[in-house]
Amino acid sequence: MLCNAYERQKMLLNAIDAFRPIARYDGMMPRHVAIMFCKDDIDTVEGSGLICWDVFINENDCIIRGLRLTEIGITALHHPDFS
Image (cartoon, rainbow, N blue to C red):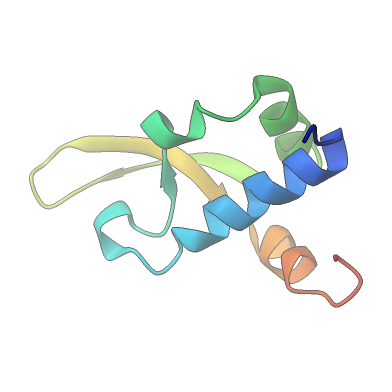
């Protein structure tokens, strides 16, 4: 089944949200996972202020780059009208 842009972007937000409790990634979706999503969808959602690229250094001094939900994104994702 094909998804429209809205459904793909919602799947992206839900996937990023699934990484929030993972301390190993500091709550963000690592880049190597994020690149599986459509770049246009990432750009659109980022342009809306719902996600942002971020960087952190883990316990092994490795630099991890990934996508993180912004506060606006968390609020929007968990809003009842965002179904």
